[in-house]
Length: 211
Ligand code: SAH
Image (cartoon, rainbow, N blue to C red; front, side, top):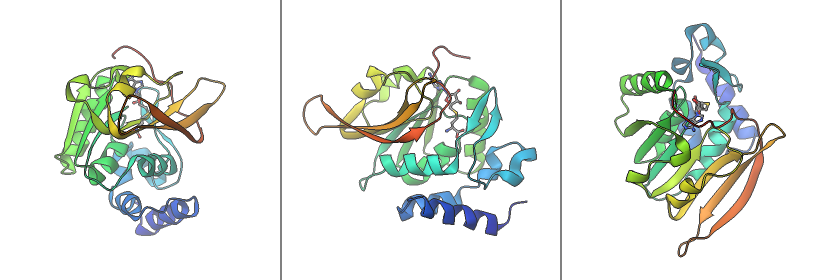
């Protein structure tokens, strides 16, 4: 069991670490993170740490989920592409805040379980695809936002191409020598993007091919 108090403590920590968008904080308050991890780990699910979710992957640390969500969110209703569904926790946060979420995962067993969880939690605005996130989801592009939860060595060009005008791509970039969390914002006209470095981070690598 997880008490409300441990959840509130997590929110205090997110605030202390600079998360100030109330919409993001409210979504983090409402989505039950303990239902996204193995029962044996549920008691630790409101600590600000990553946890294993099977197949060598991890559920991201809550602060990172909040930071990335805050970095892609805007005021207008919109569609977001997520790469790396994993257990579906970040997906649920995004589904609370965006009109539609399109989520791509290369490991089918993780995708199927995430889909079941989100269904049982009542989310009906999420669309899943078993695919290689390096390619995005070209048939449904463009997206107002793209959030990537695994780190490629370089930003995949196909993701930049699938950004709508003024769309935001938040992505960890780099190899074993260190990764930077980047935000690329497409200009309103033309093909160019503005680049910002948001933080230093550690994500699992973005891999090619399906499993
Ligand atoms: N947001 C997820 C993060 C999981 S870890 C969560 O909190 O659970 C990153 C995920 O990205 C893993 O599930 C991994 O399988 C997936 N991934 C790695 N490379 C990928 C690729 N090329 N395409 C799609 N998913 C990928």
